[in-house]
Image (cartoon, rainbow, N blue to C red; front, side):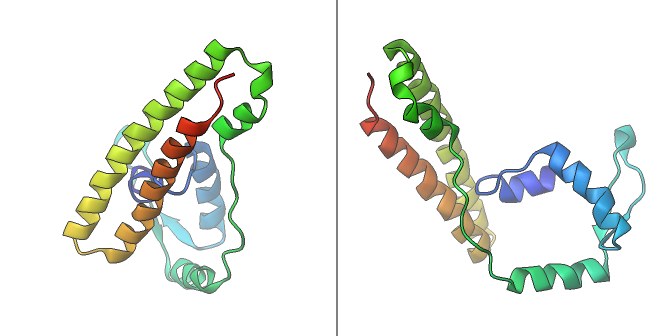
Length: 144
């Protein structure tokens, strides 16, 4: 989970419950296998040859359309039901989050480039652009 979060979290959301719910299903299908139990009874998994083949086929599929689910935009859509103070708090916490996330993902981009991973850096640049766009949008959102 930690490795997946480090690599994917800037542009793909996931929860521990989703990951841990799927791992036994993937093992049952022969795509991953159980490893030796780790500290605190952690259960590592490793991808199998069948899993690598299936993953390669998945990579070649059409990815479909993006899904947009922004909880701030959803709340702002109902802005007329908020007080001005609620909206200011909403904007303030969103600005704080996006500024922190932007700083963190910029560091990840720098590390990916330093390691010579142009593909990871490119995907992370999407997250940089997303957080910049969110911050720009928040500046223009109505306060009430």
